Image 1: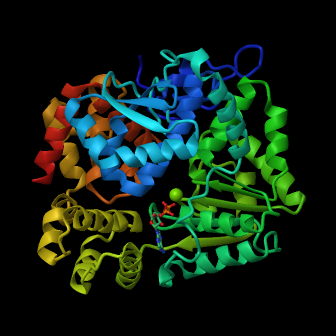
Image 2: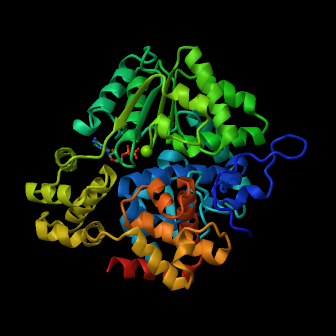
Image 3: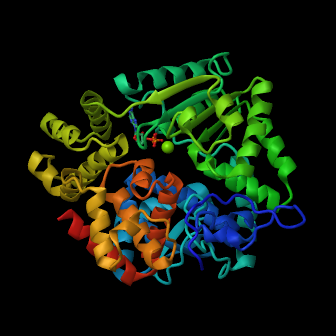
Length: 505
Ligand code: ADP
Ligand code: MG
């Protein structure tokens, strides 16, 4: 397979001019996992969709580190009666997940599919799970499902799915009440509140929220959604741009684009999160543009988030960019020390665990990248305190957060990463920024991009620039590709881990 670096492929057209899913589709690696969604007909895929929803919840609940370490390894097995089997690759993982997360997994499955009452954890073959939001290759195989046995549940699941179809579950924790306001976000917060109070007011439509990762964009969008749907009169559709694309493509495949369009155009409020994902996806952008216009013309509210301002979102069609900038554009700035302290205080108070002010200050000083990481660190401390019944102290904090703090302490540079990686695979340093696409240089380059993302606080565009002015989507693709390869190929994973350790020490 050739290295296709850029994920710019949108729907390829075949000679007849109809949209086709040629083999080139999967080569970007980015759009795979798609089949599982489009063909969400089999039992297995219905279960996969539920599972991917459960995974998102778990990820939000336990944090990225815990999720990746333990829960990401789970693959779903068959359903038997009221019990679903979950597989883990090793006995150790199985035991750990059973003791730490067993009850939670049962509860979440039961909440998704009431007929499932128990979860059985087994050591078994780990298949990658079809997570539509995850850029994995070959997700969701459709085998091994005892189809007849679960017919009823499938029907139930399907009706559930169509009900939830557009109103992707809004996280109940993301409300205006739990959003801590400070200088960096007060304007965005005020705009969001205003839209929640009086949607479709002139001057506030569309509302365009932008800012770096983990600064509260999604939180504010969910808050708007929750507020508006509370009365039960307003219909809100919230989805990531990525999901918008998957839905659109799935609709094309199942020849139901009309339904898709109608469904979208019937909502009162449409919210699209992480719009930057649509860069380079021309057909999807076009569809979004038309939906956008139809809704605004009909006096409906649009809320969009992205990592950059409309004018900086190069790669977005000009007419769409222009329209996006026509309403209210609000940015969320990086956190300040004061905001970080307020957020920590509020989250600590909500957890019910006493965290000394000294510890909060220490965290606010040390973890400056974004709120998500700050929250993750605090959650880990609280989990530890609960698990071992020990009070939170500064010493305990340094101990428990040892790895996080170390990563934040040491500033690895991208140049260092490029040098070490080039040395390791014996390629020239200049190939890190060259246009050569041969795998022998492209793979190490992807690893270096991956490590740059993991070990530095540089943004995707900044990283792209350091690698011969590549686009941020190339970096995104590299990160997804390396993550996926590490899961599949242990030797490769060891190489990458070794490099990481060398760079971190
Ligand atoms: P983004 O969408 O900008 O990447 P999120 O909205 O997902 O970021 O925020 C990441 C995490 O940080 C979420 O758990 C969110 O609740 C929390 N968070 C971000 N900003 C705030 C804030 N001002 N107050 C409280 N929690 C916040
Ligand atoms: Mg977000």
